[in-house]
Image 1 (cartoon, rainbow, N blue to C red):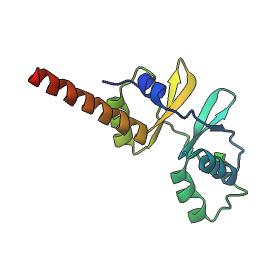
Image 2 (image 1 turned 90 degrees about the vertical axis):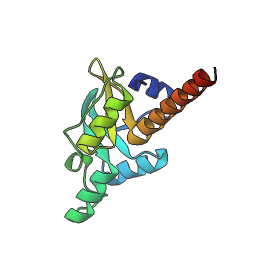
Image 3 (image 1 turned 90 degrees about the horizontal axis):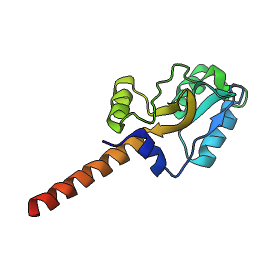
Length: 142
């Protein structure tokens, strides 16, 4: 089973953070520039929440807010599910499925070290399965 640590080592991209007073517009611009669907909201080294495309789509227009004036602190998800580098990708998938979230911040000893998306997890699980299949085929034809 692959771990979050191995997943983070394979990822090419890092992760991006914003301050809670960043406007939704500036946060969306940062997401677009970096082709990501979520930003971690921090103050200093403390994780305060996560701001996702889903947060924007459901909490700005539908509530009559302006993205150029509304800080992400009014829109972010504060209750964030987190994982550690030792957790497995299967554990991540279970959390994502049960909690209906697509991104999980990664904490090591209370420090933010990354983020994994559902796309990252699915890719890793598929790669693991493909390796298992190849190993079994070699064993059988042995």
